[in-house]
Structures are given as structure tokens and as C-alpha cells.
Length: 278
Image (cartoon, rainbow, N blue to C red; front, side, top):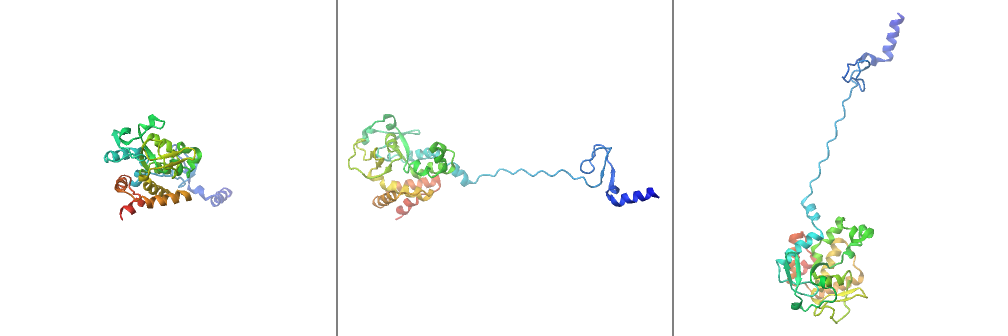
């Protein structure tokens, strides 16, 4: 009787024993019992969790692909094609005719009256000039503060701005180099640094005076860059660009160039479009 009573007490205290069984070697029974010498409760075995499916890589949209292609190198390639198909168009700062040999643009100094100031190697080639200098739009970014233009090469926003074709013009390399990042200004009526070229540079004052014919284009480019990329213009810059924009409305080539860049890049310069539509 004592033995029966003991079994009854154990059954009441540990009902799980009634659901226990001997394990068979190699067959899981419960959470850890895979041995014939152990027992485990029936029904406590849980299968291994189903692994989460790996996230598939998202496919970039057409807009994202277009943005990723907007960089300085691609812009130069596209603009070279544009100017080769509009072969009568001239270099920006001096108005010299351009001859194209593949991607290389050269100027016939004899035709436009250009004279070397100092740097023959740069003078003999066409370079793509940022009308608003890279420093002006780059210095607003953290990468520029960390290490200048070189540090910004992997920055998406900088690549967009650096490769915006609306801000790029073909220029004689020597004049492009002399202009550097100097601000545009009006300070002289004498033009003798580059022969008959009607642009001038003040190295001491860090100023550059462009010829009359392109001042309106420069103004509308500055307004475009300021508006599109949220770049602040100084009071003096805004005043000068406002004057130039009114004094020098866009001519046929500026209107045409604007629309051709829109077809390639996907957007126009609204400050040109508004006046060309009048």
C-alpha cells in the first residue's frame, strides 16, 4: 500500500511523467534528448526556426540611374558631342572658333586674335569651365570642409553639381586657369592680357571681368545653380547678376543650348526658358 501511495503522490506532483517515454538513439524527442538512455516529455520537441528570406537587392529606378550618371566626366563627354554638332559655336570667354579632333578642342589664335599671356600648354586646349566655381557650391558640403574637391569625389550631391551641364562652358585653358575661382566683376575698360580677347583678370583683387556678350548667360547660370542647389549668393553677387540678367537677354544659341541640355540631362534652366519664351 505504501508503494502504491508513493506512486500516486508522484503522479499528482509530476504529471509530465505520464507523458514521458524512452528516447531512441538518433531520434529527437523533446528539446535535447537524442539518447536512448534518457527520457523526455512527448510533444515538447520544436523544429528549428525557419530562416528569414534574404532581402533582394532593390532595382534602381530610371531616375536614380540618370542621377548616378550625372558627373563631371559624363558631362564633358556629352557637351563635346553637343558642340561638335553645333560647330559654329565659339569658346566662352574670348569668342574664338573651336575645331574638334575627337574629344580634343583647339583654337586658331590667328583667327580670333588671341595672344598667349603665359601658359602655352593650357592655352592650346579647350577646357570645360564651371561658370559658378566648384568651390562656391562645394564649400557648402561637409566633404569639402573635410578635404576639399578631392574629398568630395564620392559625394553624390557634389557629383550632381559638378556634372551639371548648365554650369559648364568651353573655355581656352589658359583663361580658365587664370579665372580660377575669382568672382565676376566689372573693373576695367582695358583689355590687353589676351590680345583681342575682351575679358580681363585682376589677380591681386581676385576678380574676373567677362566680355559683354556672355554676362547675361553668366547671370542666369548663377541664378540656376543658386535655385537648384540652394546656394546662397552674396548681396553684391545677387545685385550684379540681376543687372546683367536684365541688360543682356538670351540670344538664339543660349535658348537652343538650354533645350538641348534638357534633352540630355532631363531639366532646363528656367531662368533662360522664361526669357526665351517671351
